[in-house]
Length: 66
Image (cartoon, rainbow, N blue to C red; front, side, top):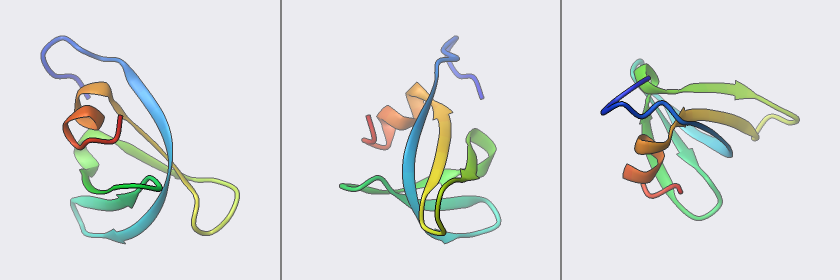
């Protein structure tokens, strides 16, 4: 999960809207974005609609999530 020397990972709570073999469609409360599974991890927390997305800073910035 590294690109351009950056390896800073961030966790954000999201709703999982859809899933394909290669990506998740997540919603962070204000924005939807497709996140490639090869670049991130998704772990279910609390209830059926809340997930913890762990992804590198560059990807989250690129998708407008941070």
